[in-house]
Length: 122
Image 1 (cartoon, helix red, strand yellow):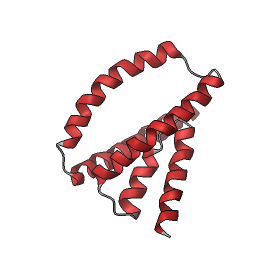
Image 2: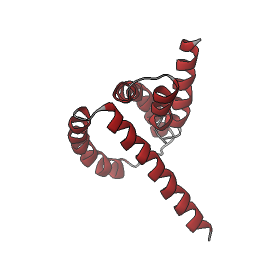
Image 3: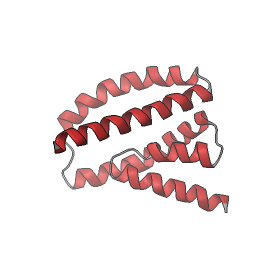
């Protein structure tokens, strides 16, 4: 039964990844909260899952001519640099702190998204 739940968590994360929203926003909390996986391990599992799922989604978006390569490179280059620094930083933190930071990130993202959508409607 537990394997089925892991498969379900991966599938739900895949839905978000396919839409470009980042499957980790769902996969990581599911692994931590429902499966009692350590936050650090959940984030690494998400990274491993991201590589093939991101590649598939990117291929489909390229096929549909939805990728602006120039803008993507402008985002990609600083993202690569800061990823290395942030990864080193994350490995120095305890799982409890990573959980709090990730939760805070999700809350902040929800507040900003909700606020911006509300302002657009008015």
